[in-house]
Amino acid sequence: MDTSSTHWSETDTVAGASRVHDLLRPEVLQAFDRTFFEREGYWVWEGILTDVARKRWTESLQKLQQMNDEIVMDTDWAAIDFAGRGLQPPLPEQITPEFLATCCGGSEQMRFMPRGLFGYMREHGLFGPGPALVTRGYESQGVMPEHFSIGYDDFIRDVATAHPQMMELFTKLFGDRFILDHCNMLNRTPSSIGRRWHAHQYRQGQYEVEDPIGTGHALTTEYLQRQCIRTLCYPEGATIEEGGELGVIPGAHLYRIPYKWSTERPDDDAAMKAGWLKGKVHAFTGKPLEMVRFSLPPGSMVSFPHHMPHHVGHRKPGTPTRWGLLIAYRTPDPDASPAKWTNGIPVHWVERAAAEGRLSSAARRVLEADNPLD
Image (cartoon, rainbow, N blue to C red; front, top):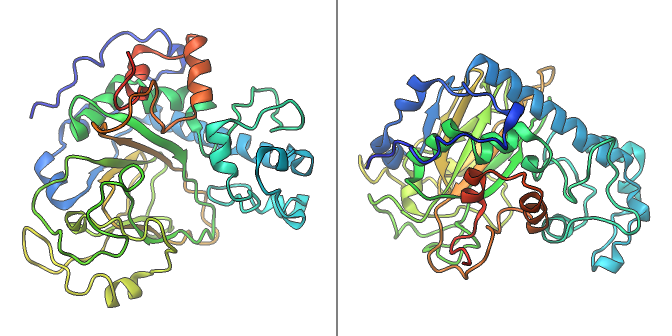
């Protein structure tokens, strides 16, 4: 399959000054091996960001983290009418300044947020009238910057939805058509506990052939065409020495098991080796599956499909924050109901952005629904 990109090369007047034109190193982009990716279930784009792009990417993630922290600390959570929105309010002891401070600095730390609030923000936005999210000199998008980075930063929006080189990268992974599933920050602070082993489902899981543990009956050498592929971007790298590194199990995606996507995820390496991994082999080689950890230099990315079990190591004390961005795209679902926009983004945001002329034609292509309404 020829995955060279031609329809992404248009001049994008919407990106403007936010665009870094020489974003990716062409030789790294062109080295992609489709056969390896489908067989092993991952691809490392080692050092793919140019020096200028890496600097800009880091600055954007640092700015977004600061914005997220400001909203956490400045918003009067006790004054928001959660009951009127059908939500439980946060616990009083979890919205004190002292507790909220522990929710800042990195990703997946906002433990004060009550169940359902994330989904409400995506569907409706946490807007007024009445108390809502408090920002410092920039417009609230009704969601947290951590969970919807493209809504708060023009550079991140460009690289995630429109930049020709990034669109060429995604074209190599998917072919000509792909739509945004989600994009969020994954910054890991010193002493961050990381994430235990898990995989993910495609869409809401309605097409899965195995449950979250699986029996192993679906092992195949055929690469699944209905895919959600995650691309993790590390502008300052992610090494084993400092922790916060990514681990995967090459070949495990061929079992088509969305491992513990909807359950608790307690499995460390020892538990995986003693449990889920026992008896599992690579579909192509017949050899036992093994865990692999990456030590990635600055400016690297890793892409892997949704069935790939993965884990994030503990970030070691005294190390700097590991800056990270997740960009997840998926193949369109031919059986999805017709709609205007993908459900991977807040519709209230994309409708405003489109009305205000803030979406390029390239961005519109990846934000439209699986089966777009005429």
